[in-house]
Length: 235
Image (cartoon, rainbow, N blue to C red; front, side, top):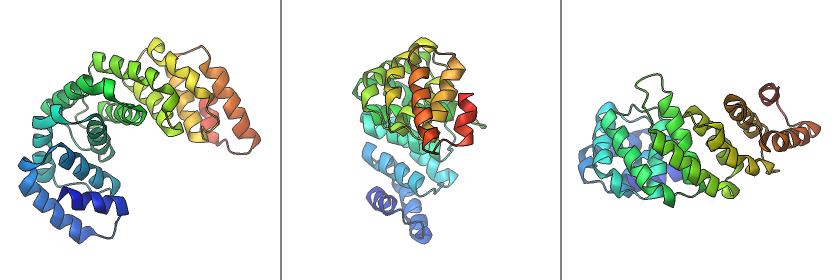
């Protein structure tokens, strides 16, 4: 069932509502037997297809996810977090505790994309309108350290998501500062520049980040590619 959902997600088969409904009901029945990859694949497919599972299905998946959280690999953890946040699913205190403990234990295996996805997701879940989660300070610190290690490997969007996630989670200027060296990327787009500017402004970070960001913003402006929202955040 999880593999079939994953395949639909890969195809972005948005016209497969009837099939998705059938697969979701079957997944609900089998949730207690799902392994870590099954749970991650199913949640990823739901998120890619913008298909919000029924409360009963999410409840069963969440219970299973909490029970096996420590078995998830780094990529599976970040995919699960990203999917939950993308779908705005409510996270219970017990699931939050289990996922954060698993992330803290495995964070040193996280590559750049997993760091970015996890920080974006945790920041979104922490600022949710309904039942926001409380994120552990030691987890934020560990993710900030791993982000610094992986800073040269972030995609433009991943770098922006990392900055924003850290700031939303209350990271200090000192924790954000090591990422500033990665702002040199000449592939940063207008949205990326705007989000990084917002993050740097929130923590009142100095250092090399601002000059590098302004240089990139100037290049985008010269090419007519800097939109008004990004410009406003640079002001």
